[in-house]
Length: 130
Image (tube, rainbow, N blue to C red; front, side, top):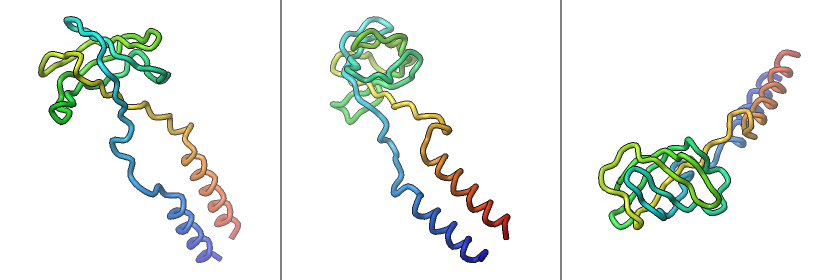
């Protein structure tokens, strides 16, 4: 019985594991609209997850996304967001692009956590009954 449960556990582990790694798929691009001395605004469109406090980078798409500046979002108003430049390599202009990472959901709100907890509890219960 233990051998069957061990095989079941391993098969479940492989079936529920992610198919591929998700690297650099969370960055979203936004166009720079207006540039000030130490601030700039960019268009966020209908992206509701953009909020004050997020940090991101500004890149130059004409030069293979070379880093131009780092920033912190200071506020969102309608379809535009304001950002404060926290460090820069060159001056930000309207031809540059903003990159922001989509914030991840907390671990307790992810489906994989609850599936793993349920499977682990079931296997633990069955092993304890032996």
